[in-house]
Length: 616
Image 1 (cartoon, rainbow, N blue to C red):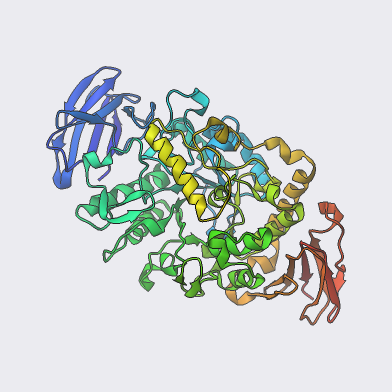
Image 2 (image 1 turned 135 degrees about the vertical axis):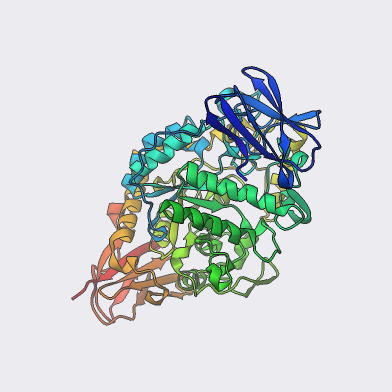
């Protein structure tokens, strides 16, 4: 059932809402001309009406039982925020991306961004002028953090009234009003495609935010059978669950079909509880696959999950859910600990070079191994799945935000560490994800920020933030998530791209991305062509990747001193990249230009060196 308000043209607007709880339902048009229109009951708890003299931009609410009024659960736009009236939207748009057929998943260089802090303006429109710079860096896909309408303090200054990571959204179909209109988002997607950039949208199907959440007045969207970290779970397998499933499947198709979005990133799928015979994620996959067949363009589903369970991405015929890819937190954690030395919280499960070596070869470090932090066995082997079905990173919104001060890598570690970490990610066989500003060493933090109007909720968020850091044994107070200053400090400093070490780092990322996208050994991503081994005493990892015609040997020194080792090789190999070179503002290379068999390789402290065997 295609829920929501649908403008049919000529002043006709169709309204469909799922509301099995109320006994009566009506549409209350509040502007421009007030009127009330009764809805007629349909099967399975739906209500329907076709209204006359209702045009785009008309604002409306639903009136339940002749008493309370609330916004549309499937609202397309909330011009006055989560508590205001919904608005009728005409989704007509003059697309110019007819030639766009998307890109293969394995070729993507993902770039996660938060609309509100990516530019000074914090809008969809302001992203467009930056696309050229991203493309020149080698970025070919942006991943937009959630844009579903979230709360804002109406008493705050207009430019900062709405500030949120996006995971507190309560209207999944409504584009965040402070970012722009639905047409503004379409303009951004269209511009991305013109630049050869795919668009991934982060969607949240595991919970609704608390402020402005009126869903339960309409229908049983929640179940008390399970609890998530954010409260009652979404109802995916209890009574009336089929319509809840349909609600979210329609939402996914809405973004992919009507907005030409290329892929969806599904937030925290471990909190989507469903013990039915057909899991919601499988049903979602089937619906998206049907859309892909109809449009002739492949749409992708990428899951964020900390379960280390390959059932998410195994084909449906192999009794999996059929999603296209999933995140691999193990890679991040293994690399992060080697770079920073952190051992708080879940980082205590990592710390050896062998962990990162296993992440290169097997993807999951914990594949039914005992995890000390979890006090149990965790994960399962995923060696039957391609490395190109896993997204890896060294920075993202969660991992930066999980630092009490929201610190990025560069303020916390040295410039040499940052270059080494970049190489470790971009030379992997997985899909790399960069967090906005990472490519030039942005120093602005990315801390958690919100803007609520309920004083009790504000206090609960503050207390929750403090408690969250107790597990990491951090001392001091985290930045106030409600403070305007917390949000403003997270804005990117784009001018850094052209300054000193920041410009050097940007060129380093460009070089790594170009190598990744062109070298035959890196284009071969089959597990049978990847080997990694480590020397724990020297804190060195060697990544060996090859194809039929050439090979690369990537040596990573995580030690604070230079080390010497001998590589098991039978032919001379030539150095093609060294992060310690003075050209990259390094201390100076100690590695030979040509490395012969049995010759000792001296490698500078905290550095990466890449050797190549060219075809004969």
